[in-house]
Image (cartoon, rainbow, N blue to C red; front, side, top):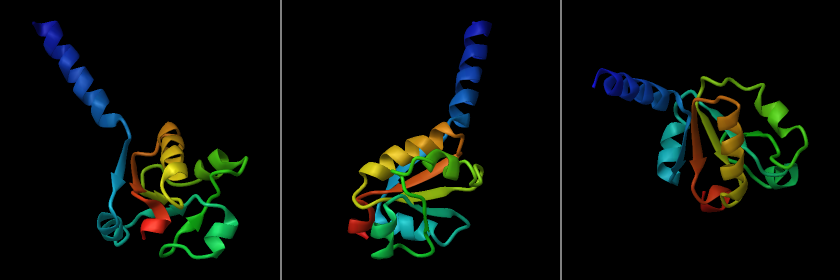
Length: 114
């Protein structure tokens, strides 16, 4: 029984350390933007030039150095990520997660839903 309890405590501790990717609606995304976050647009530069959300920084998901650019960001600061409709941002969020970012929010429906 002692071992089961110790295993359960270890499991809960590990689960709390795992980064979380949360798919959020526009309203929640807007609320999060009022906090100290990193707002990342993962569309292409030409898409970005056509309009972007708030003070978003463009890091092209399709660029060969995407992971390298992302790795320069603050892993402890929440990340808000979006693309055009949600496909690239979902994949980008997985990259953020794999690089050790703690909190990642993905805009449901992307820029088109904005």
